Image (tube, rainbow, N blue to C red; front, side, top):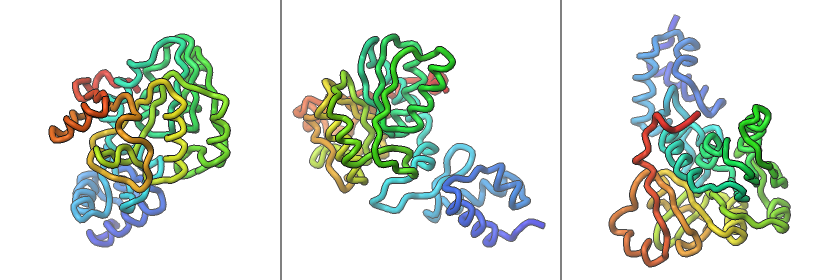
Length: 270
């Protein structure tokens, strides 16, 4: 016997709270209703600000002023992140030494790095390291993987903190690809987590070319911790052009803004 509407929606939120992400098919089977009914429930719950619909289901909404866990971030704006990842990977040259942080957008670069010869990839992201190892074992990736260790943050699937920063000391990078939580002309690039932001700032100081990758939901947002000012970053890759009123600030800072929206979703890899 299926649950009544309000009781069913309360159960959806309870499952979402425990799992972080729920799939439409799973909810339909668990609550013994059709997928159409679940989709209507999710529409109503999203409309009341209680969850965020994503392809195939829904994820929790992070509280204002905090960074959502990796599992949730990975399910949001997927196609935009794939386009940005493809555009970013096109900047990588053979024999580069690149840093990939633990952002879910930088993770989307990896399918496009498979056949670039002589790469050395530094990362503090567990998912990125695992994906690169999978490609290496299939002989699709032929470079080196260097994992930057330190204190583990399991919710965000990364290392960070003073020990991680210390482990960066011997290294310099040709290019670094950095994710952010917010960006505006006055504050520059910002993040919600202090340790992540400090690490990103240090990476930017140790790279020849700093590249920020972010979907348009981050544009116009100001998070709690400063990562870098606009002049400290060489390139911003987004799935949209910049707001027209920012043109003077962006040009003055010497920031190159690349719009990835021209890439088709059919070309976005796995």
